[in-house]
Image 1 (cartoon, rainbow, N blue to C red):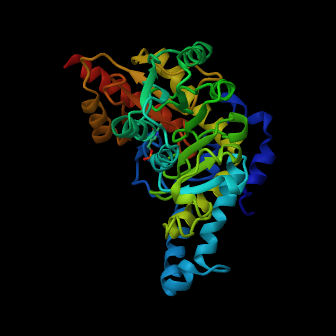
Image 2 (image 1 turned 180 degrees about the vertical axis):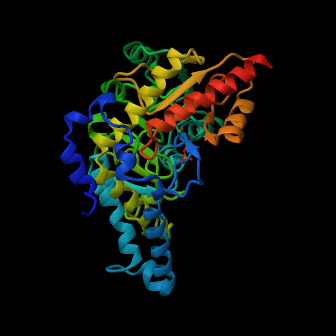
Image 3 (image 1 turned 135 degrees about the vertical axis):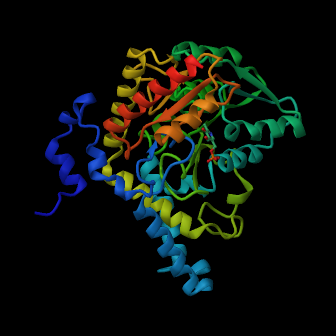
Length: 409
Ligand SMILES: Cc1ncc(COP(=O)(O)O)c(C=O)c1O
């Protein structure tokens, strides 16, 4: 008997039996087996938040597109119907369906940073106008504003979010209190890179709109890991990466600009339209865009509801094990509405995080992210479709071993 398709599998087990920890966390691993990835044997990869792996299917589609492109470079790059370019163009429609908007509102970029830069550059902010953001933004979401501050006299206001701050409504209130008559933009992450906190974006977007301020969201840590509906989030723009949770080729990204904000957010590189190739974009990474389309298809087939449930089930298992074993201070949200597939463990300053990450890699083949020091002394762990309960348990054991060594040295 042939193996059931992923859809058949999920409909056989039924959505209700997938709920919470009752759902075998390896179910998606079964549907999307580890052999689908090129990880070296035994590698336990918990750093999708930095960079995600491409599946074989995505790699093969990307390479196939590249071969096809090079067989007739001119027509495949500039031609229209039936060409590799046409396959790349189709990715905007897939991305739009994935994020819940129209293809006219989507542009393909190189990265989240590329998207945020395009937005910031397009706004023509004047000296004295203000951008409101947080102290937890990744450079990809903040460098563009710093550029405008340095070169054009734009002012940046920053609200603080402490590592273990889990009070979403207090965070919204701080945004409300910090908006002034000169605030032109609120720029904020959907999921904080530092602690994985799921930010109250619908509330922040609504607040910004009520004050006539644009809301720009950095979605690098969200799309592909959790369900994203840009219309429900309500922001004017949303930039994300292909090469993290979407598990698409490196150097791909998606930029959403709401049709309501298209007059105000009008990047130069999309002046000739939002198509993948036009006179203002120039030639792009066509094979990469084809691969991005296949990566989106893969997640759609799994169903983002299932993917998010799987990711959170593993992350909650990790949360509970780390809290129970007192491995350090889990600064991420407990299981619940603010939790995401990113989990951060804060450790005493005496423990060298880099040495810990090296030991986990060298002695256990466990890959984690060291959190930048400006945020906290800790490690960040990501759980995605290829991770399993067994891997989470192995990670917890490895951490316990290495933390015991670090504490006794
Ligand atoms: C919140 C956030 N924004 C932006 C980036 C940068 O992403 P990219 O390299 O795709 O621009 C990262 C990378 O980790 C991130 O965590």
